[in-house]
Image (cartoon, rainbow, N blue to C red; front, side):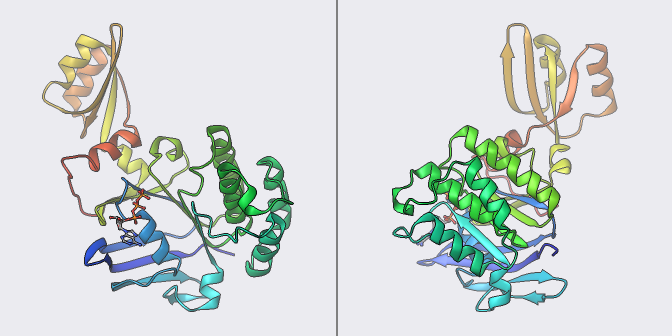
Length: 302
Ligand SMILES: Nc1ncnc2c1ncn2[C@@H]1O[C@H](COP(=O)(O)OP(=O)(O)OP(=O)(O)O)[C@@H](O)[C@H]1O
């Protein structure tokens, strides 16, 4: 099995004439973990639903690409849809069914279903299989979604904020399980979220949406290279960053950490070195806040 790629061209979806997705042109490479990031209402869930074939575009198109598949739209094609798994926070599960029936249904519908992985994850997340879905707590319902999403091993797997109902230790379990299973069976994974700092270590590529438009699409490393963090004595940090665009600042006693946008030129790097300042990459969270902030800065795709 290899992962599926995704291509969208002028993808547009509107609700009552108001665009939720506004002419999106995207290419998501196969076999990578993509972060789909955006503030509330930016269009993440709408995009996830269109990619999974749950909703048709009003304009433009989506193509799902794979070696044996060619390039096909994700609608009304049983082969394509069986290879795409979208897990949403709502769960899309039959509430009145016991958990084990939900698992049996998934195993019959999902061509790459892995029973051992499902069992292992159910134990890890302590999901009771005899209970009906409606009797599960919000966190356990989310955990069940995560189990279904991972054990399906679908060539295109989309988690649309499906793990938000889980507490921090359970979310960490999810991130570890995702990474371990992705390493064993590489496939295309999309994580839609606004918990940027939590997932940033997992991501290889990032798509940032704002108001239904593409703010940027970039490998995480080149995004991080768009800025720098500078740590050291507060006065030296202030001197170095005067005249630069400062995205965030933190001060602890006489030490200060500032995040700046843009490359530091050789002169600034030499100044930083002689002042004993530490220079590091910028945090994804800070860039995200900047790129989707009130200034609403827009860039083309990178
Ligand atoms: N079924 C719907 N009916 C009407 N408007 C909708 C519907 N679904 C989404 N929208 C609107 O489309 C826009 C994008 O919503 P969407 O849920 O895709 O954003 P999101 O980035 O997933 O948000 P969040 O992070 O809050 O879940 C919003 O303005 C939302 O109000």
